[in-house]
Image (cartoon, rainbow, N blue to C red; front, top):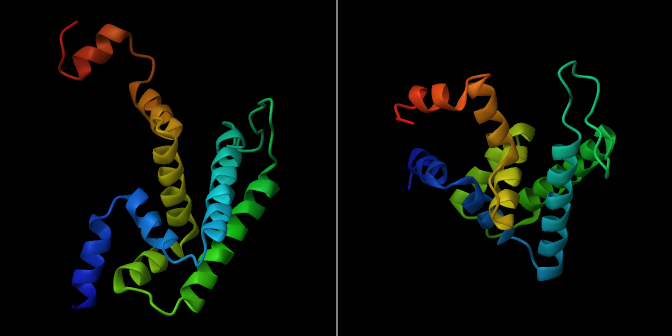
Length: 151
């Protein structure tokens, strides 16, 4: 199987399935669960420490994480992914391709966030925020008309 077909197969996977493929590389349930918990902490830290409009002020929520804490969690995740890539003896070509994709910090963050959101069975808050930004200050009726719907 050529590299192009492997890349195509890994691209067809959704983000949750990509992380599931990587989670199968862990040697024990305890290690896998610890990694998932770190991912959940990272997503929670990311959600409540997103920069405000000026890029400096972070939202105030009851349980507040500092941006350095979020960076520490992300560094821990990236370190674990690097170790999996180096130490795993039986990497499938698809797992290798996914790990290569997750080597990019932004891609890893997106895949992890999608996985955690899917595990929690919630709609993604960042997707909701994006929908609201696109909608702007339209009234409900104007928004429905923009979607081609009648009120």
